[in-house]
Length: 618
Image (tube, rainbow, N blue to C red; front, side):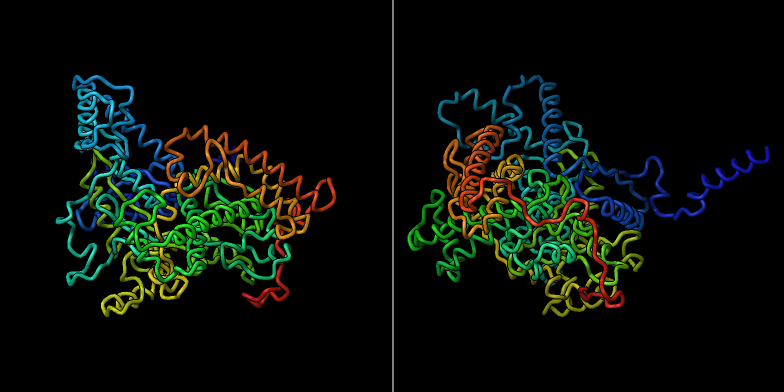
């Protein structure tokens, strides 16, 4: 009896502990009837926690009531796009038919079209048919009323400029304010100095329908123990470094069809190769002038206007192909492709992968966590100087947002100095995060060094509380943006196609790719296997040859699944050919074997020789 009572008391104490040690927050003060906000996002738990808490606290101070943020986290940007388009199409259809209009079989395609132009009636389309299409399109794009149709979600937070641009062109996003009604002091100072530029170095950071809130770069995380094991004596500093055969079967990569951020990193790699080819051809100092002339001429893709040599375009196209070839070699060194971009730095920190592509905040955060208590910095992260753009993660309001007023206030908070502090302040500092150090780049200019005295004073004030000194060259997002100029014409039009190409080339035919690359490495490397390398690198020839020009329209001309299937079959065939040619070079038809660690050894980290020498390699 006494024993049972004792057990019961212990259970009661355990159940009471969360209430005894609960930290009171403004969220605890939320009551039924107080404002709510529904946001769909791919952002991680730490960001969701801190910004729900921070916004509720800010809203309580500014408007007298807390806000409960209802996060909808259904996956990456691809899953979010599919969900939103499906919800909007179904909701609009119900509303449209309730008005007495018939539903067309192509109704969804019409209202969500990115290219529909009511002023351009296609040949062969009857006038009454065209009038019906235009009426449907105008009704969708001209209605922003939750009582008409809505996804029942207020905001889209995260992703990238590409995803926000797509959502805008599909009519899913609406402006928070008219341009003349933007709150003063939000985007620029009263004197006119920009706090949040429209963009830098060719990257867009805000538009009328979405606003960048935090900045990201892309880079490489790596495990120094694993570098030693692979016989690599130099830490990676450029994208090309990951194409070395010594990385074979050790890289962690994310699937670009699931992660918009990693897809942007892959595009960046191709963009850099275009730039290098243009510079090698002697046109580096003329690029801006040439691109301006091409944009003004508005000619067909690849056709150069007067004053721009054809050799310039040929250099861009040659660099584009080199970029694809580089992505293929990096993919050939992959141990895996994951659906989650955040998994790669985790595996690198534990030694389950030797290196991998990473978004900066994932890489830097995991390096800090992984190195804590080790006695030396076993994990590193680097953003390649001059080889990574600085892109923005947007916030936007969805058409028909049921809680639009609260959504507008959320944008005001995110772009305010108080909201920006959460991205970069240490845990527990005044105005900083409560639980998680987010370690991300704020977008506001006054968090970085500047020749503007007001901005410089603000930077100095914030620096006392930030997790990292944002004035360091590798952490100053504005300096990084100046060092890398993005030319959209070179690669932006291939963005969607690139994701599917990587999928077919490196994932669906990944086993065959690694077998071919392993055979080339065993034979002595790509330099001694030119025929095998040529076979491996051959771009798809079906349903038509893939090149810079055809790649701009191929995913609009052919069904996506058909392309994936045909490309995968071609790559499997040519990888088998490449492996056969490599074995001929090696003089042996047998199986190849490379000196890589077994899966059992992947997680083992070698301790430093001197545990007191932090940062020194053993």
